[in-house]
Image 1 (cartoon, protein in one colour):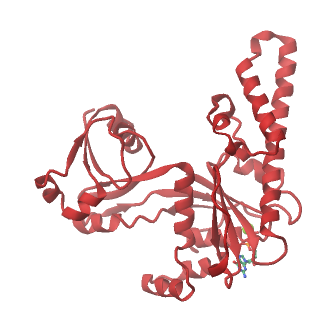
Image 2 (tube, rainbow, N blue to C red):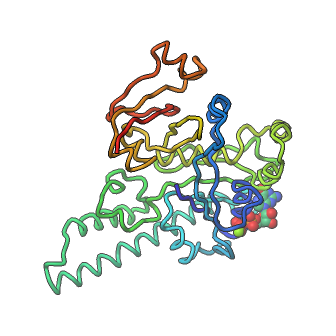
Image 3 (cartoon, protein in one colour):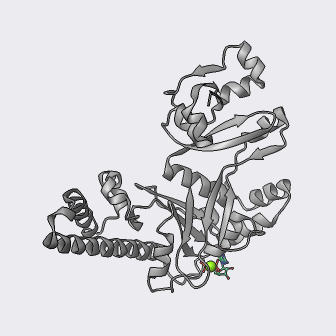
Amino acid sequence: MKTALIGFAGAGKSELFAALAGTAAPSGRAMVKVPEPRLTPLAELYNPPKITFTEIELLDLPGAAGAKGGGLGDRVLNEVRPYDCLLAVLDGFSGAAEPLDQLQAMEADFLIADLAVVEKRLERIAQDKKKTKLLHDPEEEAALLQAKEHLDLERPLRESEALLAQPKLRGFRFLSAKPVLWAWNVGEDKLADVAVPEAGPGMVHIAVSARLERELAELQDDEERRAFMQDLGMERSALDQVVGGIYNLLGLITFLTAGEKEVRAWPLRAGQPAQEAAGVIHSDIQRGFIRAEVLGWEDFLACKTFKTAKERGLLRLEGKEYVVRDGDIIEFRFNV
Ligand SMILES: Nc1nc2c(ncn2[C@@H]2O[C@H](COP(=O)(O)OP(=O)(O)O)[C@@H](O)[C@H]2O)c(=O)[nH]1
Ligand SMILES: [Mg+2]
């Protein structure tokens, strides 16, 4: 869940970063708590000393990152390469450049950078082939040629499920293969009536005002924040939209654990079985998995306590193949 901000200079990346990370965070890198309102009733029930949220690692490259009108630059592109997801900020407030032009310029930079990687590798393969057949991996070469064909058509790799699933391509960490959350940073007065494009394969669009969000993040009081949002007609905070977008793009759901010591939210890829969920907590729990005691979120809300849930037969015993659902409260039984 490592996410990097990207965009041309002055697009509002640092402003948005400050809004998401909380203004107290030093600029550059931050762990951002994923809002999880379902932890509140669980915390009220158990009153534990520890309430733990899932966190997203957020990177805002310091310094001049990409000149307006120019490209993003190799330094920026290389630094975001290890990240799972890109939060691409488009300047829609200053009027300096059309946000759609910025989006297309960034897409072009991703494609050109990926093509350069593919071509360099293919050249290397051609050289190796001349020297000795032993070094040659025909599957890798075929995969690279397919990727090249796709990129030559000016299509980002994230649009091809087959290429994304190709194990021989994974190690290259292609930029155009990364899921992108496009944040249209519009002027504070236009927030209410801006329309962003529909989501596409591997991409989601949100409208934010980084400036307003930063001011919002500075308010300590929840009530004050709610009033501020209501006054401005803001339905969801940038944090909620960004987190929602990232979870969407990465195909993540949340499961919960609850007890006297800690209540906690955990991320899991949708469709994963209980034994994988156990592994998110600890490899010992995964290895020694016996069964999972599961209470669905709606059932918890209806029962209020685990005792009542048990009496009503809603506390389920599930095996390792059980596919975890969003909001499941799980207690794992295991032996080590
Ligand atoms: N009016 C307005 N100004 C903004 C907004 N977002 C950023 N800015 C300003 O634009 C300038 C560049 O923003 P910054 O976050 O530093 O851009 P970065 O280069 O992408 O990190 C700063 O002076 C910000 O205060 C916005 O939503 N509205
Ligand atoms: Mg900046």
